[in-house]
Image (cartoon, rainbow, N blue to C red; front, side, top):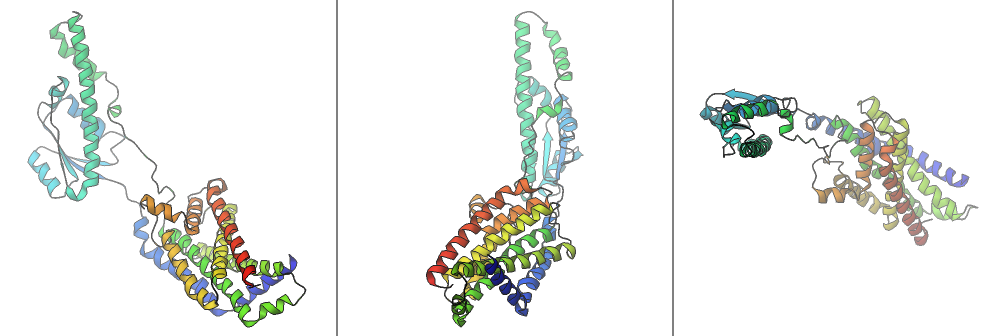
Amino acid sequence: MKKAWHIAWKDVKLRARDPSSFIVLLLMPLVLILILGSVFQSGFQSTPFKVPVAFVDQDRGELSSILKNEVLKGPELSGMIVLKELDSPEEARNMAIEGKVACAIILPQGMSEEILKGKTATILVVGDPEQSIKAGVAKNIVEQFALEATRRSVILSTAADQLLSRSLIQPSEINGLVSFWMENAPAAENLIEIRKNTAPDQNRPSSAMDYYAVGMGAMYLLFAANYGARSILEEKRRGTTIRLLTMPVEPFAILSGKLLGIALFTLLQFLLIILFSAFVYGVNWGSSIFGIALMALASVFAMSGLGALLASFLRTEGQVASIGPAVAIILAFLGGGMITIYGWPSWAVLISRLTPNRWILEGFLSLMQGNGVKEIALPLSVLGGMGLFFFSIAGLRMRWRGDV
């Protein structure tokens, strides 16, 4: 193992002295992080979801009062619904049609009385086609209110009929009884159900700089791995590998040293990206130092293995130099490093999870949200399994082909 370490360290020092490696593998990702993080920052600035609504109450009854004051202006919805009360239905319609509000809600005269009698009442909702999502939210709230109000009115009507049929109350007492039930009904916020689902992008970082630091860092991990793997083929062409085999060094030690050299060089490059982006760009990599270290090692292990695997199937360093970067860019695109993963369709999410880039993103984005090692167990396991698979196949291919 000592001989393998010496070979690995020698390879790292040789590559570190190459000025082109500094430009391509360190300067370029940092420039891309800065550009992408600056350009797309607006897409990461969260703004409150507001639904402007024009509201016309021609009913002035019990149910319209509950809908306006206790539902739309209630604690659950007051932060989302922006209510503009009007007297004219025509004005409300025009505001919706002209896009000044997301929708207009118009309550007709006698609505409360009709519903409480078990009859049909119409609530008019006029939506702006350009704000269909917001209009749909308001429409669903009104529909849920109407359905629940109708259900409760049916219960009231049935109960009143039963009391009348058994002569427990007089017909003249019905109105007073209904008013009593309305006043003592359960809280209005229970009249509709407000569902708050956890968004699929709950690990979304606070800035584009954070996101693209991970995305570009993951892509250039494969660039660095390809750069290291290319040297194996270059040494074979120059006859350096043959000279190593004549020395008292086991072929396994040579192969292990070469693969370890790829991983060390890739790790060095990634650590420099993390440190520079954290101290210069202000990227938040998370509060768990141990979690960051584990994710960095797992990421490097997977990408180094993939770089070695690519080199084991290519015959010349020129092929690695041309095909390797193309593969890195494709995987970065599929894994979400170039286009943010939020809102992707299910089939695209499935494809992205086949790439190490996606798991690197998920692990680091979780850490950026303040999570620890426990929450990144799955990305760590997947990346570790990928790295082991890639290195195993690469090692067998290189031994079989005679690269070392």
